[in-house]
Length: 527
Image (cartoon, rainbow, N blue to C red; front, side, top):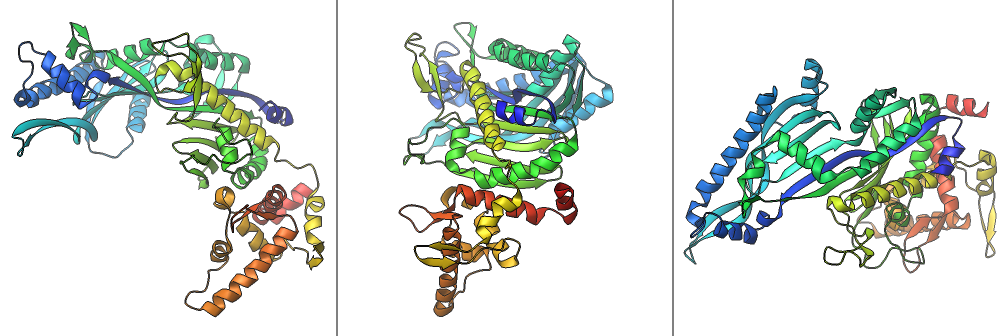
């Protein structure tokens, strides 16, 4: 990343890294399974405990207490309760609209109640065994979204499932939190949506983002939950002590923002980075970005079973590039015109490691799997930061100081390989340009492509006509040999698949850039 910042130092005002969206889950682990809940029911109530036939009445009583507790907390604080039913409208947009209309800077915003599917329990009769059996089943139930403008973290919400096992989710935003901290520190800034486009003291902003990592998470999350629904803590007890929630990080987004002085500077460079990211980053590169292990020979481990997918999406505000390994991803996009953002999202920490001990042996430290619990949150942040740094370092190598003619000229000349002569390519001619753009498509960056797959992209393969199919296959084989002779593609060892070389990625990127640029843009760059 330092290399990237240094290369563009004259164009940027600074950079910052920290959490964007954070989504926590609070679980009562004792009743999170059928066995655990049955054990609690046997213990609860004294004597024979809670009988199976009384489960419906008992659980319904808990549900009603949760609902009333959430409503009372919001109304007593001065907020309003809204019932949305099964509406698909954005709850956050509605909450922000209410906050803007009422000018809320701190305090309750609203409580939104919706009907949503959630994992719960149901007692049913097993006719064969003639017993009542408790089973986990998804059910439509009331969920409460309690929105607050918190004095510390800004806009956040607590989502409470009103039915057992009473799962809780808390969502907050690191950039929103940063703005609160900057206000308290007296540092001026300009904000557009969820991006800061200018900060008076960038060093202070980075320090405040780093300070978020030292947060006592259980205390903060407990405070937010207790304010949203104070009844929850006392509903289920064991030996007169409330059941303790286990807080885990369900999803995190670690974002690195590079702030450009002028939007036009970013507009001129971003298309090149986006194209190179989708064309040049293979599966091994993406795994390395996210800190996952690859073989010493640079190949994907044989036992690796998850998908590695790269895609480019054109949005209203520009291009977004996303590389995904399973449920984790690293993204590149431009925000608010002048902010280049790289963002690593961690849903699933499997395959990631942290140097730690265990609950039984804290001193026995070694590299172990990352846990979802907040105890390993600092490691998730570290992985996100290193991922963004690797990605930006990869992009910093994109710019080519050579002139377009110097790069393209060699492939435009005839070459001789093993005594056989091959014509030069003409990247600006329709046929050769279509061929180069076809082999450079993003879907080939992981597994490569075959003769047949490329024929499909370039106009379809003949069906039902064996003679025509053979003719097309032969023509494509000659085109592939031409590209191979110029060093643009190479065969994947032991297969019939082909993949771009480093030189090929450069040629294809330049061809794509020229193909998408207008004559006016090319003349401006030539001036």
